[in-house]
Length: 325
Ligand code: FAQ
Image (cartoon, rainbow, N blue to C red; front, side, top):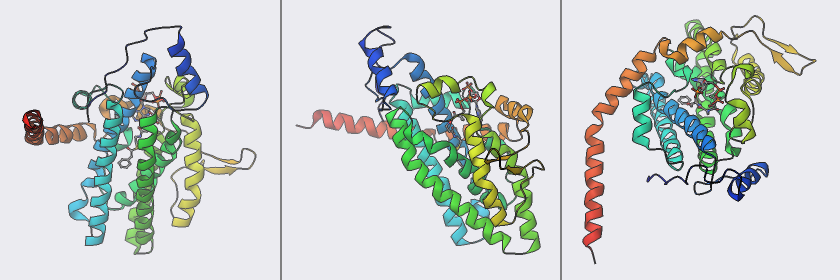
């Protein structure tokens, strides 16, 4: 997709363009690529959309490792389709970032250089097959909780990409839950495998929503602009409330002794997230950060010939179009 040339940076600080932008946001309408927008709005969107796109692409790795070891043809084809979906999500999101004037090759270079982030969750290992189910249930579940409100994000291309992504993520969540239900109906060893996997993924899944509100530098402004619709803590609470009954139905224990229903609040109380661990993972020192980036760099290098061939083909097509009557 061709990058759209951005509108000039903040041409009139106090003029009709800014007023029009503010009005669009205030009236809950969509900002579109050719509309004037403040540079800070553009920058924060590129930051969030790029981080989201990178997460989808890096997020193919933890489950992708199980494609060759899936226990049946049915499970293998489901997993293949899911991992391919994540690649598709990455592409819609890079395309959305391009409408803001970003360049996909540049975003990829920044990811590979460790200059742009991707979700902390994908830096945790997947040593057991139950992790495929747990990722579907908890990780896609958290992703849906976070992303359904983004279907109403103020930036049109991002909001529209989210609609399709959420439909697919919701299918992913159900396939994960179904996989876990199947394992839970199996042997004691299979049930133990599920519990062990849930124990490892529960807290990292809560970290996906980002730092607590009083330590989230971007939230207030992103909410004022309608880029985000809820705070990190609101969405984390929603996820906990949604997941507890699902865990009960599944027959697993969530690894938090402080987790209990609070009738007064009408929500579940839960224990403290280890924010020091989150900071370490985001800083690049999680269990699999080095491995994930090394794999992504290798895949990028191995794909160089595809990019070269596609560029040569596009140039050939353009040359043919130029000489055709
Ligand atoms: N990991 O001020 P805030 C998926 C960073 S789902 C790493 O609160 P913001 C589907 C944040 O960027 C996962 N970094 O930031 C899938 C900021 O750093 P910066 C992707 C994190 O933007 C499922 C700093 O901390 N989903 O891929 C994380 O207002 C299964 C301060 O934070 C999305 O990206 C984190 N968890 O709120 C794929 C959803 N949290 O840039 C495969 C869209 C925060 O200032 C398999 N994104 N940081 O240097 C969002 O909703 C927001 O960007 C948040 C963060 C909520 C993630």
